[in-house]
Length: 285
Image 1 (cartoon, one colour):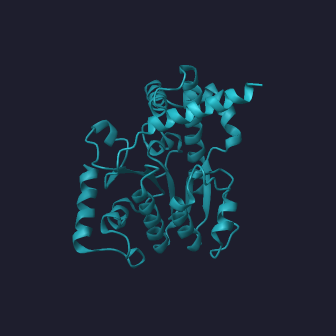
Image 2: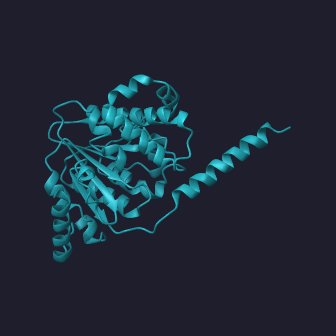
Image 3: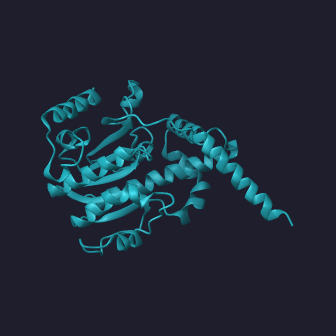
């Protein structure tokens, strides 16, 4: 299994202490050398993270730096910024302030402290960083666009709807499941379009996104043009799943150290309650 092969490579690197000069402070288990040896040459690498796992953002920066050193990184594309936002007009000496402005960075949704190091590594290497996500202004349109449903097979659409349902802790009204799923599909389509347009012969486009977006069975890969050589990597905190169907959705799974369990549904429920209370108070005279 690809997961076991990658684990073996990482373990060997840890034993040998094989870290690149630019990654001297990076723990060997997070060094991307073995990963890239298995993936390159390739047109596109999808790196699917768990958004709140710091090791995953460290890996992202390390992959950016490694590809840049090899002069094979064409573009760094981000779920964390919208289509149309780009650093292409900035120089390699651009400040973080200038980069954040160019990408119209939403620090509340995507903490710059987490993603800034990977972004700035690309900028300093002279590599363009581009937004790939659906612009907020197009979200409402996507919700009512039933044509998006037809972009997935019936089983895949059902699976995506279930992910939306479970991802919102089964707290969404059923009437919102289809619209929210369409937004997810529209985001995948936007990222696919961005990646396809950025592809360059002999170079690699790197997309940083959530693990669900890089799933071959449901996400961005479904919407890419044929002939584009793509590899998907899932970053997973804790032991990799032995579920065969899940494993087939990614070319490689890179298991990192487990993180403390967090009750996301409790937080989500509190947010919904606070939003409802605020809305009610506005209506009251």
